Amino acid sequence: MQIRDYEPILRSLIHWAKQYDFKIVSVTNCVGDKTSYCDSINDYHRKENSVKELLGGDDGRLQFRKDGPDNEYYYIDAYILFGNDADELVADWSFSSDKADEDWTIAWDKFRSIWQGKKVPTTQLV
Image: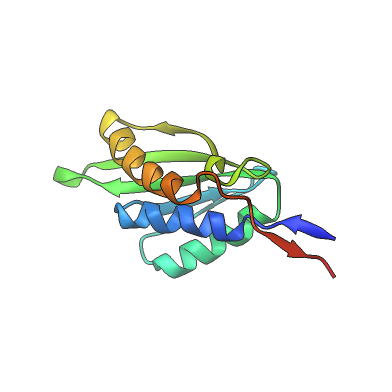
């Protein structure tokens, strides 16, 4: 039996967010359990923990932060929905400021340019 494997798509999203200086600050899984990350947790562990939390269900939320000038922070809440096409992994997002939305849209467009029109990878269940 083949199942859809969203892990590489989720990892790609996190990768492109990081390329545009967004850092995961929390993940909320499908049952509403939230894990927040303090600044001392490195990016690798943030990514690994977030992927693990989200892949256990059908949906969830990633909150990203981007540092701005004058000790300001910009936030993006990305609502993840497994079951969508590869380039529609994020069903919607909310933002703390127009600047956050502008910067996120650049990262999102890069992610979408890679996944648009591609099928979600599959894996064989044993």
